Length: 127
Image (cartoon, rainbow, N blue to C red):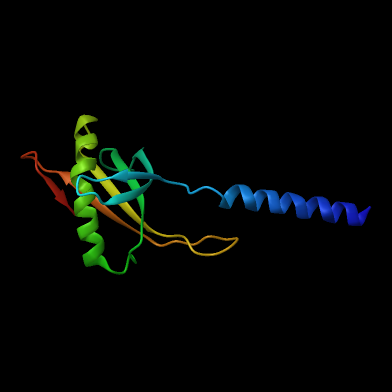
């Protein structure tokens, strides 16, 4: 009986691993420049203080410690997200750059958030 339980547990573990590792958890969006971005999610987020914001999370090949290159990448994404942000009447937005996850069973990834706020004159400012 114990051998059978072990085999069942092993099969269940392999099936779980196969299901979680087979498909990427993003969709590809092509920017006007031709650059492809792996979008993980776009959602509304709320804060304890201040208005809600639209948040785009994407997966980057850059290290989040390379802030200069990461900011240039986000500045290329922002004009496209800004269209949706304004169409949905948000006055704040967040672009979350996430490193490619590493690890076999437990995945780990670093992220950095860029916050945009609409100014009184209608322009947008990255914080």
